[in-house]
Amino acid sequence: MDPINKSIVQSALNGFLNRDVYLHLETTNGAYAVHRKESNMTVGAYIRNGRICFGRGIITGDGPYRVGLKIELGWVYAEGLTDFETDQEGRLLLAGHDQDGRLAVALELSLSPFEL
Image (cartoon, rainbow, N blue to C red):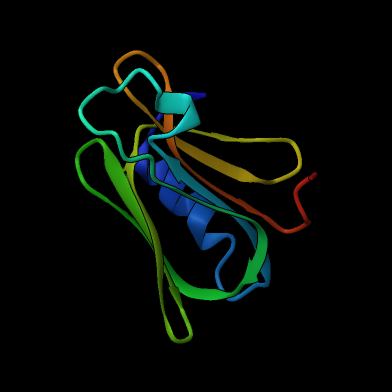
């Protein structure tokens, strides 16, 4: 993955507008972040192959970044994103890594389902 380039990510988001896409969204301070001692509470969220259609997608911030996807009745967003890549299958893969390179958040979009 490379550090986020806002213009490249925005262009990739625009390529998914008004299409049925598959979403992978994951946040955690749990298994990937057991090193954290600030809290005894483990939290996380995970969805894989949620099918959505969004009419607006935007990346904001100066780093770490936030991506918001406007769906019919609300928003999907991920905050704390630092890295991205687009692959040969046309997927957009976004991740937020901490200063030690550990994953904290992932948002991925694809026109076909992700492998399980």
